[in-house]
Every structure is written in structure tokens, then in C-alpha cells.
Amino acid sequence: MSGRKTSFIIVIIAFLLFPWAVPAKSHKHLPYPLRPVWTSCVRLIRVDYGFEIVEKDKDTGYILFDFKDSGMKSPASFEVFEQDKDGVPGVKILLTMARLPSYMERLLLDKLERKIRNDYGPPPEIRTKPPVEEKQKEKEESGKNDQNADSEKDENDDEADSDSEENG
Image (tube, rainbow, N blue to C red; front, side):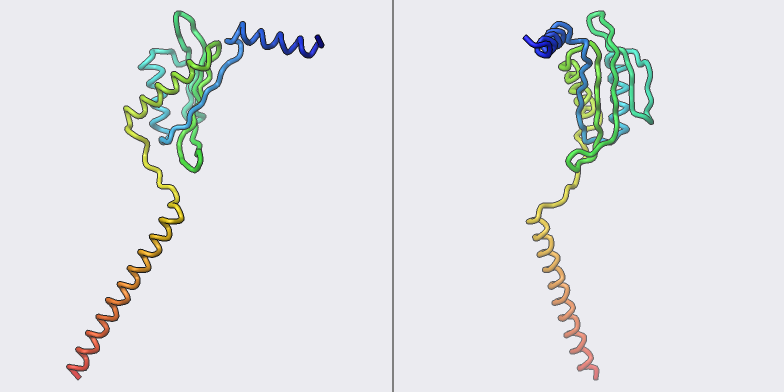
């Protein structure tokens, strides 16, 4: 076996035996404004779970906290910042939890999303650009409205002409 294959196999075995050695990083995009997402993150960590917040900075968008599970304490962080996704404004949340499997991060992110929906309701409706068919309908309707306005104007002009003929 070559040295490269041996090194590769050792690295794979190390990851399998010590999965906590590689910090996982999960993320989620939520179509909510930054403020409610930030406050929900802080409340989820501090109030709902009772974890200690080590440091936080709203301007920079991070929260460092100690995640506790089964007596084990693990450093973790939320990063929260505004980011559009596919033209939809919202917030991207990155969650990093050292020494824990990534499914724990996904569970916490899902819990945060449920909390935001429960506290603030469904996300605000985003008006996207209408499809081409809708644009054509709008143009046709506005064209009809213009024609109706023109015909009403013609009728009013005819009435005014007849009034002036009667008076003249």
C-alpha cells in the first residue's frame, strides 16, 4: 500500500473514531427580518435552554454560548446576518457546535425556526416579480381602462358639444 493511501485510511479512521474532533457547521435561511431572529436566538439559548451566553455582539451578529447535554459542556456559536436567497430577503443563521454531531445542530436550528414561527407568525409575504402572463393581463386591463376612460371622455365631449349647440 502506498503512503498516500495509508494516510487517507488513517484520516478516515480518525474521523470515524473521533467525530467530535471536527466541528460541524449547519445553516438555515429564514425569510424573516433580522431583529426577530436575533431576539429569538438569544431567548432560545438563555431562556428556553438555560445555556450560558459567553459573549454576544448584535452589530457583528454572533452569539457564543456553552451547550450542555448529559453533563457535557461544549462551546457553540450562532452567527446571524441578513442575506437574500433566490431573491427572497431574509436572514442566514450559521450554527457551529464543537464536539457534537451535526444532527444536534439541525435539531437546534429547527427548534429556532419553530420558535420564530410561533412567536411572530408566518414569514412576511414577499412580492416577487409577476410571471409574464400576469404582466400581459395587467397591460390588457390597463389598456381596457384607458379605452374606457377615452370612451367616457368622448361621451362627455359629445354632451358638452350638444349643450353648447343648444345654448348657441
